[in-house]
Length: 553
Image 1 (cartoon, rainbow, N blue to C red):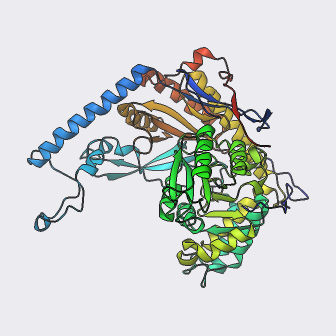
Image 2: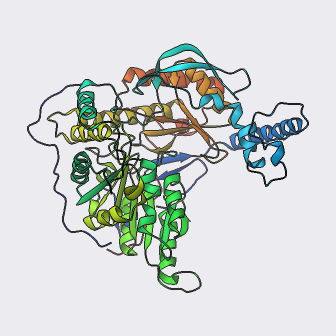
């Protein structure tokens, strides 16, 4: 990449000071397409918003259920053989002296793991022995007992194209410009802190990173945490509790779900990106209040993600913001997969949709994707951050972020902002957008069913049938392409898929190599189920149906 110098920091970093206190998709048999929402006759979107969720032909769904039915039937047969000693059981078992105890390992709960997951277990947890950049090295392993155990051969599979890591901007790399400051930080501050932020673990680098995050997001204040998952699961309980209502998208990440459950608040689920369903729940909450007593809810908190990691879809943020203002609810936005990955300067879906950052009450994100590190942040008003510093379990009990990790994040964030005097960061953001659109367009032309927004770097390719999931991953690895395949319970049982994560560090030659392999395997495995390829030409998608919301101006 070119490395021209800048004389100033890229972007305006002084956020507004006025802080608030606080499209229904329709399936038509061929595809579900989402587009611009409107409120009181004017569009809430400043650019076209197109997402596709094509349905598979009926025979694919039927064959998928039949496949699962056959595997389940043989699973019961094998369990019968294990019970009678005709087949060795490799799973955890109760000790004989405890056979009269209440079972610690629920046998039926492990049925799926024993009889379905084990058949394709070789496609997960592969040991990597290099930097997880656009290409990586894998340790070769073999199994002699049908995936129950593995042995390493000592050989290394070199230069496997990495299509599964969340390395969207390519900063998970061994670039000397980024590693030298990290090594210096190890020398001066060490590797670990061995204390929480509330005790002896509050470093100058932590406070520098928090100021930089607030500047990057155009908000008053921010707080960083050492674990992305815990950023959600331990902070949501600090914001809501008993007598509060959480409205959660049905496809929210497990960390959001766990945080909501730990809070003790009442949880109600709305259909994914369905604004009419969300408004119905909001209206019911305001009108009827809490069950039985009908008292007003203490707080109403809407939980959504910027980009959904299994669907590749984006939150319909302009409509959600309009609804939260209308019904005076709070909004918690998880930008784990979107911060750095979308928006003209990488500032996430807030920037992508042109939303004022102060319209979102709680901004959450992680450093595990675009920043190539670990940890997460929560940003917003000074009052919000002050509350979390005294009430968050992560702040009080968890070990603070490692100093070299903190330094790496600071270096990457300054690069994205242009504060390092280069255009490298903005070039990577733009390259990611180009790679994403190119890869999605080519997959549509090849005839695959793909989900999500046209600008989302998360690209799910639907495979459906359980047998084809394992075969797809194995054949791709034989071609030195590493992919992530996902099935039940992470997805609906009939919607198993391969999930591609596009990176700015992928070259066009790499993407073409993957696409050529996909073309061959699509024909070999017969997974080119899309009917849009014959109904559309090039990059054009079916015209979406209009969506209207009646919102107060």
